Amino acid sequence: NAGVTQTPKFQVLKTGQSMTLQCAQDMNHEYMSWYRQDPGMGLRLIHYSVGAGITDQGEVPNGYNVSRSTTEDFPLRLLSAAPSQTSVYFCASSSSSGGLAFFGQGTRLTVV
Amino acid sequence: AQSVTQLDSHVSVSEGTPVLLRCNYSSSYSPSLFWYVQHPNKGLQLLLKYTSAATLVKGINGFEAEFKKSETSFHLTKPSAHMSDAAEYFCVVSDPPGNNNDMRFGAGTRLTVKP
Image 1 (tube, rainbow over the protein chains, first blue to last red):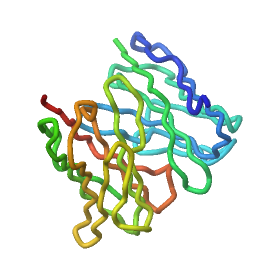
Image 2: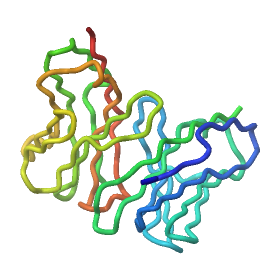
Image 3: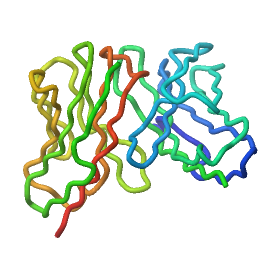
């Protein structure tokens, strides 16, 4: 029962570096999403996907790219990290029937 | 677009006393509403969910919430706080119902439980 797995748990980047946050789910969920969590702002939707090959922008997409080549994986890419991207990132998945959203444990990213 | 307002950024209660965490929402539809809890350095855990069935929803760990359409509220309550309830709580609206890809989160309420 792995559920939603995010890696890494912690990461420090220098401004301008690139990296990919990994997210994998083993529940055969069609819907997957990425959120960022900042103090006093709750979670905000970055990008989401309704199935393999389909992605769309959420509330705060700038500076992030996603792809969905398989049902299981939904990586989030930062092409050129900025200090404003320092945050905790959560990946979530849910079934096509509008079921419960399952969240990963989060990735704490610091950009210096 | 839907939105959520959690009316208190911080709530402090004594162990054994009732808990009330307030949430108001705005939505163009009859929304799905959720409460999630996040313990320190942990991920998010679903407490309970409302999806147009019974207006009083019972969740895990003794929590419950009542959907009041006339007041556009979905407040979270628990009769007696436990030390382990200390955490951050998020009220969430999904609009239209079932569209879990457009879940809007409140800013969160930090619950402190004093011995």
